[in-house]
Image 1 (cartoon, protein in one colour):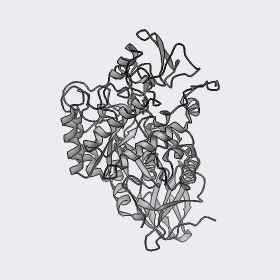
Image 2 (cartoon, protein in one colour; image 1 turned 180 degrees about the vertical axis):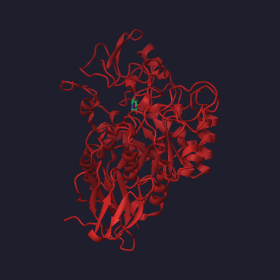
Image 3 (tube, protein in one colour; image 1 turned 90 degrees about the horizontal axis):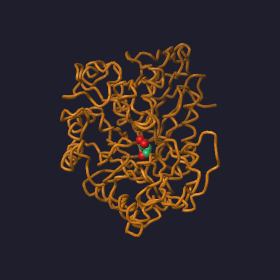
Image 4 (cartoon, helix red, strand yellow; image 1 turned 60 degrees about the horizontal axis):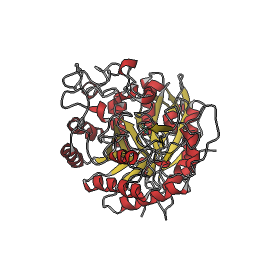
Amino acid sequence: MVCHPWWRGGVFYQIYPRSFCDSNGDGIGDLEGVRSRLDHLAWLGVDALWLSPVFPSPGADGGYDVSHYCDIDPVFGDIAAFDRLVAAAHARGLRVLLDWVPNHTSVQHPWFHSSRRDPDGPHANWYWWADKPLNNWSSAFGGPAWTYDEARGQYYLHLFTAAQPDLNWNEPGVQDAMFDTLRFWLDRGVDGFRADVVHLVGRDPALKDVAPRAEPGLNDLVNSYRDPRTHEVLRKVRGLLDSYPGERMMIGEVSLEESADVVTYLGTSEDPELHLAFDFSLLEAPWDAEVWRACIAGAEIAHAPVETSPTWVLSSHDASRHRTRYGGSEAAARVAAVLLLTLRGAAFLYAGEELGLQDATVGRERSRAPLGRDPSRAPIPWTIEEPHGWTGSQSWLPWPPDPGCHNPQALRRERGGILWLYRRLLELRRTTPALAHGDLELLDSPPGTLAYRRSLPRATETAVTVVANFASTHRLVPYDGAVLLESSAPDRRGALVQPSTRQLLLAPFTAAVMREPMPHRPG
Ligand code: NOJ
C-alpha cells in the first residue's frame, strides 16, 4: 500500500500577514484579518496556509528578524488570536504552517543582547564573534558579512542585514533553544513549518574564504556551507516533528540552483531530513516552454532516486509576481496556473495569484524591504469598492494595479475568470488520483509547447495529459480522442479539437488538461 502523506501533493497558500487583511484599521494586516478570510481559502480548496513570520520583530527584514520566537508581534495580535486562527483553520480542514527562522535572530533578541554584553555569559558563543572579519564573505543583501559591535568590541557574522546576526548552531544551547521553539508551536497545534534558509545552519567553524567572484551572492557562500552538520541538525528536526501525531512537517527553503543539490536536504528513507524542500527553478524561469521543460526534467531526475516529491512555486514575497514577470499577460498566468496545479509534487500559491494580481508600483518613500522587494507585498484587495475590504487608514503599501477588478468579490461573479480557474483546477487535482499521486512523464511536443502525462501504475486509474502553448501563435499538438477536462481559456474552448487531423489546435497562451486516451506516446 503506497502511503500518501498530505504534504506530498499538498497545495500550500502563502500569506504575507502584513498584506493579507486588516481587522483593526491600522493599515497593516493581522491574524484576525486572516481568520476573517479563511472561507476564501476553504472555498478555493487549498490544503494548508503558511504564514510568513508573525513573531515580535523590529522589522528590519519584513519579520525575518525575530526578537522572540514564541510570541506574536502586537501588530498582528496575540497568542490568543493565533490560537483562534488555528482552531478556525482546522475547523475548515485547513492546516497551518509557521515560518521558522533558524539561521539568524534580530539584534534585538535577548540572546544577542546577552551575547554582546557578556562574553563569559551563557550566550557568549551563540553567535559568531571574532576580533576581525575572519573571511571575505559578503552579506546576501550586499556589503560585508561582518559588523563591528561596540558593546562586545568584536565583529559578528550576518549573512543577511546587520540587524540579523547569525546563530551558531554548533553550540548545543542554540540547538536546544531552537528545538524548544518548534515544540512550543507544535504543542499549540501547528501542522508544520516553512524553514527560512535552513540549509545555512550547519557550517564548518573554520569559516573559510570563498573564491572571489565578479558578483558574489548567497549561492557562492552556500557552497562553503556544504557541511555535514546541517544534515545532522535536519535529522534531529525531523525526529522531533515525526514524534508528534498528525503528519506534522517542514518545508525547507534551500536556495540552491540545482534540483540535485536541493534533494540532498531531504535525506534518505532510512535517515530522512526535511519533508519537502523548495525548488525555486520556476520562480526564476522566464516564460519559455523549453526552460520549463528543463526545470521539470531536472526536478524529476533529482527526485526519482530518493522517491521524494518536487515542489513548485511561481511567486513569493521575495520575487516579482509571475504575471508581472510574464509581461502582465493574464493568459500566460492562467497557463502557468494549469501547470502549477497539474505538475507532480507540492504546489505553493502566493496569496493573490488566484486573483491575477500583478506587482504594485512602490515609490522609494514607501519602500521598506531590503532589495526593494515591496511590489509583490502589496495589500490584497478583497472588495470592488475602495478601500477594498481594508478598514480605516491607508494600507501600509499602495494597491496593486486594478484592485477594483482583481478581488474576490468581483471575481466570484466571473465563472470564466482566473479565480474560478484556480478553484476548478484544485478540485480536479483532489478528485483525479493521477493528478494527486501519479507519476509524471514528459512528452515530445512542438517547439513553444510543453506536454506531460500523469499516470498511476494501476490500469484502472485514468491517465491525464497536460498540453500548454507558451507561444503567441496557434500550435498543433498530437491528439488522440482524449476528453477535455479543463482549459486555461476563459470560455474553456481555447483548445480546439480537430478530429480529422488527429491534432489539437491550441490557441496562443492556452493550456488543456485531457483524460485518456493519451494524445501522444514519446518515440
Ligand atoms: C528568505 C526569506 O524568504 C527572505 O524574505 C528573507 O529576507 C531571508 N530569507 C532572510 O531571512
